[in-house]
Each structure stands twice: as C-alpha cells, then as structure tokens.
Length: 368
Image (cartoon, rainbow, N blue to C red; front, top):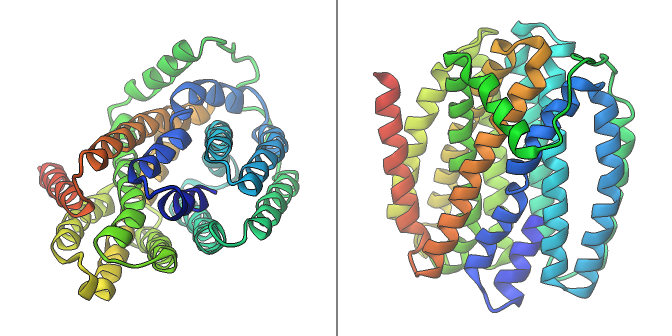
C-alpha cells in the first residue's frame, strides 16, 4: 500500500517527492504513541490472542485502503496508512516477543533471520505489486490488499498460545507514561539499551534508503515505475540475504559483532551510491543497493536477538515495544528531515553521501 501510494504521488500527483517522505512519517509516527500500550498488552495478555484481535481490526483498515485506491484519493490512502501504522505498532511486540517464548536462546538468531526474511519477502511482493498496479490497475490491487488482510487474520488464529507473561501487570491508559515506562525497562540494562540503539540505527538507515530509492530512480537514474519496483525488489532480497548471513556468523551466540561489520558496509555502499547514481550506472547502483540492504540484515538480526535474549522474560514484550518506540522516533525524525531536505531541493545523492559518512563514523566508534 505504501509503495502504491508513493507511485501514485510520483507519477499521478505532480511528482511531489516530499509527500513520499511524509507517507513514511504517517506510517511510523503512531509507534511513538501506541508502542507503550502495545508492550503492556503483549505482556498482560496472551500474545497470540492479541495478534488475532489486531489482524481482525486490520481488515477494516484494508477496506479503507480499498476505498482510497478505487477513488484515487491520496487523503484516504494517507488515513489508511496511518491506521496500518497503529496496527503495526500493536503487532510488533507480539511478533518478536513470541519467539523467545517458543524457542531456545540459541535458536533466536536463525529464527529472527527467518522472520526478517519472511517480512521482507512480504515487502518484496508488496512493493512489486504496489509499484506495478498502483498507477495502472487499482481494482486488482484492492482485491490483493483485502485478500491478504483476510489471510493474515486466518494465520493469526493458528499461532500457538504460550499464555500471558505477566497477567497481573497493571495497564497504564496514559500513552506517554506507558512509553516512558518502556524506556525505563531498557535503560535498566546498559547492554539491553545498547542493543536497542543498534536496532534503531537499522531502521533509521533503512527508512532513508527505502524513501530515497523511488525518488532517486526517477530524478537521478531517469527510470520509470518498473525500475522503482526492481530497485525495491533488490533491496528486499538483500535484507533477507544479510539476515541469514548474520545468523550464520553468530553460530547461535548472541553478539553484536556482525552489526559493526554491517554498519561499515552501509557507509561504504552509501558513499558509492552517492558517487555513481547516474543513468549510465543503473545496474551498478542496483548492486550497491543490494550491498547496503544486505549490510542492514547484518545489523537487524543480531540487535533484535540481543533485545530478546537479554530482556527479562516477564517484561520481554515491553522491551521489544520500548525498542520500537526509539526506532519509531528515529524513523519519524528521518522521514520529516527527508521531507524538508527534498522540499528544499537537496537531492538523493547528497543525502546518501550524508548517510554514508554517518555510518562510517558509527563503525569507527563501535570499534572503540
């Protein structure tokens, strides 16, 4: 849905690049306000039950998206994207909090790689279909969006039920206080907080790359919607490849060492993209995007496995939710910054160069 909206904006709504970045903000922004309550719910109640309820509500959000696509209404699609952002925030602590409940610690790296691969395979299919159908065949896109919402609800009902981790947990209605409590859960452990920050870096860099990719494809590589889909496909496959490589490098041990390697590789890849992103280097840029995204997999798997393994079992979902809050804040800041930069005419190549410099700096600091 997000990709189809981006294509609709770029190729049907006067090419307002800043709106593409704003769409990213609409999706991740709710996590700042919802994750606190989401973490509480996932620890207070059975996670599988929470997942089933979230996916039931998601059917209604899909219906709103269907209306937006049929009417070609950008405001309606932004509203649907906001709704999906809220639901994704509720689902995040469940998805990652369930793994340690059902698996041994040594299985977490490979399990996270599987989850990340499945997630980005879904992104791959979604970006391909969204890019191809968003501006051409909205009816087919609507059928697919609603069909997958129904399938997701059915899949949620099949999740094993481990029971509530903390059934006596008192729920806070105030989202600000609930979010603050989650940050405190992370802050109590230096290692846990560090792992959360590393995972935040993955999402910060990732949303920058995913947001810039369609814009760069049009303005610097001078290609159409099909090339946007191809670029997003390469990026998604790279994330999956990097995730499995990270699990292999970890050998069942919880360690952030692969994330350091990945951060340096993101820096090098980002700088090369900034230098070579021209029409005649389209294939080379695709290869570099694969390197950057695979490097992201090296960051994502170790960091989330560490959050899961190093957190208190009775507060694990809240630790995941707290990580999501920090990540959402970083992604929201990145999206709003990108919106301003693109509005001021600063192009994707310059922003990729800045990302590369930041990544290399972090890589050097990590070594110390």
